[in-house]
Amino acid sequence: MSQIKSYKELIVWQKSMVLVSDIYKVSASFPDSEKFGLTSQMRRASVSIPSNIAEGWGRLSRKNYIQFLRISRGSLFELETQLLITKE
Image (cartoon, rainbow, N blue to C red; front, side, top):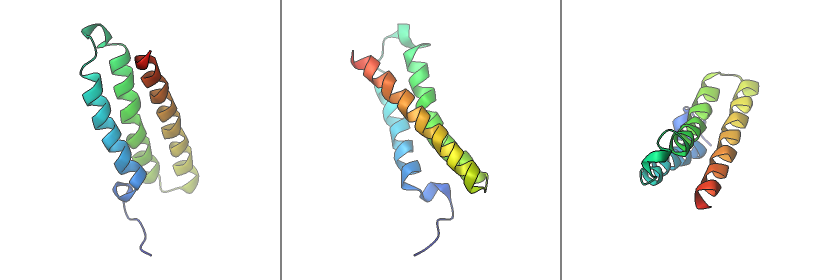
């Protein structure tokens, strides 16, 4: 089994990058009145997910990496909530 050498090899990072793209596409159809509201929040939350995975990886400490994964998870829950709001 080979060792992962970059966060870019992590499936969770790869999938979160796809999620960012999907969120940008979906939020592009939101009304202009949401440009600085829900659209902005959803985009920032989605970008935060792979960003924190990458930052945690770069800290070179297991403890720090786990903390950044927790932050990513929090952003994921935030985004999920915002998607539920848009559904309503």
